[in-house]
Image (tube, rainbow, N blue to C red; front, side, top):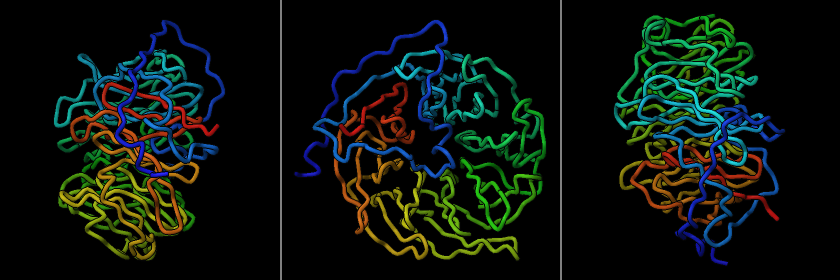
Length: 417
């Protein structure tokens, strides 16, 4: 069978979702409660999924066409699906049931009208509450069942939040009784807020740099639980308990993006930025409170498609103009295992031994992980759109593949029969 035989096939007409007027009781369902899932490793625990897709792609279950403008992905918990989008009057959080029917909407501040208009962040679910950061600096908590706003914090007013040309784009982290985020302002570069009230628990003001577009990960290194993230010009670790700077190292990109969630393993951290800024693995040096570059490659200039570490191999997508390559490299050495120049610039996730790669213009690829690197198993066409239309990362949860493109959210059945 030719693994490319089912690529670039037009989808069947979309089905429209129906709006509910009252909330529904949640059913027990698999969860993907935050950006990149539990632990932010971007690896789903799903099993018994298709290893090849039928001609034209997996069956489309439903399409919800009213997500608003933007790039927010989805989170799934408590039998509900959550995303966000910009409308004429406000940025809004949207809750759907598992059938793709709207349960509630709730406003979260002004819509983003700057560069690349639209929503950025994906709602973070924790203990039946959603936490969401607006690009203009409004961070709010909402009851996940009803959409009722619980508290809100103006990050500009409280911390002097400072952000770049594309606004604030962080997917905030909820851990224990706290929510962590990076306003990047002189009154609080990185802060911890009380999950229940929004009150400030601690704020770090020693970092002399503003916020980038990075969504952090929580790791435990040398016995210290810490938030690992990037500012505009550095990569660093912040202690969760008191906000102290544990370590930092310069990472100054050629383009002021720094959007990739750092990939941590055994004292080493991979970070990257687009436009030939390259990717680098750092070794954390606890004694010097810094990190030392172990290897660096300009062609691994992952912008915001995400990188996944699987059994010592790093998978991701470079974005250099004229040289966009999907890569598999050895995490410890940076040695090339395999490169591919056909997939283009993609956002990725992983489930059941397969990589799900969404091209920014609308080709969806299923890629098998092999001893030699990877192999393209299936592809289908979601419908061509302008460049960077498909920037929300794909999500695999509950036997389904979720794909967001601007106004539309689609759910596909990817279960093996």
